[in-house]
Structure formats: C-alpha cells, structure tokens
Image 1 (cartoon, one colour):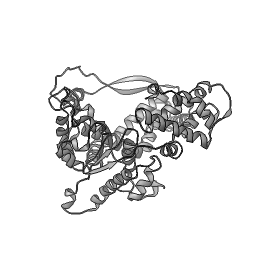
Image 2 (cartoon, rainbow, N blue to C red):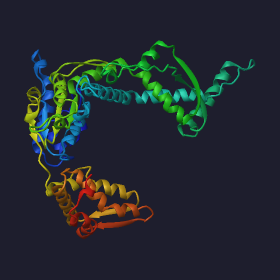
Image 3 (cartoon, rainbow, N blue to C red):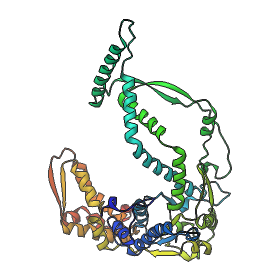
Image 4 (cartoon, helix red, strand yellow):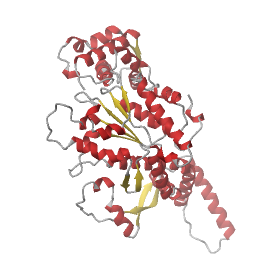
Length: 458
C-alpha cells in the first residue's frame, strides 16, 4: 500500500483500522489482538478531530495495557504505530522513575521528552520545506565569498567594470557547481559563545525541565561573532544551517510542536510491572513502587506539565503501558491506575512456527539483514527451507529451557550460526554460501546438546 497517495490529515496519512493492521503486519508477526487495539486507538484520534462542538474535548483516548513476555512485539507495535501516524513518540522505562522527594527521574520528564521529540519532528519538516531556498541562498553566499574583490581603477568605466565582475562571477559559479572549488578556503562569520559557567543546586525535577541557564545568559549578553577560515565544503554546512534558521519561524515551530504533542503524542511506558509489588512479595527497601504509580496517575488522567517551551496538557496523549507481569498481575496496580488503562491486550508467547515466519516474512527480517551485510563482502547467502525450520526450532527450544526472551533469541542463534562465515568473509572473494539444515545442526550442536544453556542467554 502506498501511503503517499493516501489522504492526509494534520499529522499523517488517514488509514482505516484494517489498513493500519496491514501496515503493522509488514514488520510484526502475529499478535492480532494487540494490532487491532492500537489500530482502533489510532483511528479514534482522527474521528475525534472530525467531531465538532464541546463534546470533542470530552472524548479521551482509551489507553492500552499490553501484557506479555519480553521480545514478542510490544515495543515494536507502538513504535511502528507512531511512525504510521507521523506522531511524536517516546519510549520510557517505568523502573527508571522515582517517587517525588527522591533523587532520580520524575515521571513528568516523559512528557518533556515527548515535547522535545515533537520540536525536532516539526523542525525537520520545516527544514525540508525551506531546504531548496536555503541551498540557493547558501550558494549565493559562497559565491560572494569566493569572488575576488578587485580594486577600482579610476580610468575604468563602470560598465566595463561591471561586465568584468559578472564574467568572473559566472566562471566561478560554473566551477562551484562542478565541485571544483570545494577545497578553496573562505572566511565565515560564526557565533561566538562566551557564557560563564554557573553551578546551580536546583529543586527536585528542575534538571528535567530543561531550564538551560546558559541560554538565559546567552540572551542577556551581547551577540558576538568570530571569523573562521574553512574549506568551501565545510563552510557550506554552516551557512546552510544559518540560512535555514533564518527561514524558519521558531515560534511557529514551538506552537505546532506543542499542539502535536498534545493531540497526537504517544508515550510507551515499558516495564510497568517493575513498579508493581506483587502479592506475597516482601517490602522492598527501594523507592516506593506504589508512589511512582500514584505520580503517574495525574499525567495519564490529564494535567498541565511545564516544559521549557510552555505548558502542555496530557488529556489527549495516548499512553501505552507494557509489562511481562511474571511475578505480579495487572490487578496489583493501584486501582486508579488500572482505571486509566482500560484496554488490556495479552500478547502470546512465540511458537516455533512464529519464529519461522519472523525469520523470512517481515521487510526487516534477520535473514534479509544478514544477506545484505554479507553481500557487501561479495558473499551471497542462500537459506534452504530446512535450515529456516531448524533455526526456528533451536530458538524455540532454547527459550523453552531457559529464560524466554522471545524473538530476541533469534539474534543469538543467527550470530552463532554465521559467526565463522562473517569472520572469514573479508577477502574471501565473490561466492555463494548455502545454509542447509545440516549446516545449522553442526553450527548449533553445542546449543542443542548442552543442557547448561546459560552462556547463550542474551
């Protein structure tokens, strides 16, 4: 499906839930329930935008809780969903947050990270729009720098002088376009940052607000520049950046980014089960897990968060939480937080057949990746159907007998299988290498036969 031809809304292509699932299936095998839930959540965002009247602000996103072992696609589903939506996306680990009053990351930092991503996203889009004009201006400035300033002769007529200057300029312009002047040295004016170093002891969370004291001093001190001598190839990058800054309205970028983060932002909270004290667990000396949950509550529910770009409301940000919940249950979350994650999706553990499909079907499958890597050394890898079956079988067996790390196990198995080939590849010359079932068994015999498989755990 060609997304470029799809009708666009404010933030990305308009896709039906079925089309969203179809796009996700290009990269993620199985987990149909999870794909369906996130597809509906994404489509509901567009539906809300189409609603008119006061009720529009009352329609809140249905946040999602994904439950399943590691390596089954929880993070990948969320990341691909954000890419489809053209939405700001951040992934955070719940275990890195601390309760208010303790040293560490406070939960509001996830929203500030989201705003930073949105700023970068909107700025990148604006840079693409103005790049052509900025490049033209850059070439003009470089041409001015390399055009020699000849002294004015009193006996020379102005018309003759202008004609001579234009002739030299045209010649230099042609050489510049042909790349003949890339090593010529030119002088470029660049900002000189003379900002005092200040050490500040700030209240809890101030470091996360991104309040840059250097920027504050920079605004108060007079602007100074310095002249640098650079090659044309290096000067072009600096001048292009300056020209794009001149063409982009930073205030507009911030305004659009804040709106995008509020209306289309997606926050993926991984390892949420790590801040749950499961039933029967003894009291932990660590920072209160329940306290972190309660700090998350107002953010997921909807509140104002201060960022260095301005205030942002979190009411319509989509939160997707995920956890394995091995030693605990979603019901061990504080009741209020459970209510803020109403859609629950259980992801299945991967079977040997799933592993087989993961190896070959996705557009970024491991087999395609390794074939692309070795092709750079002139080696063409050919995998037989039997070899793929055997690789999937070994990955499933190792997961069953040791820690289940899902599809990540395939990385271990593939790297072990191809270790000698990749080591010998440079300088081996152009050749074809056929990977058969027997090849796989021979390369992975230690994994298959050894009962102590801990050395192969990632």
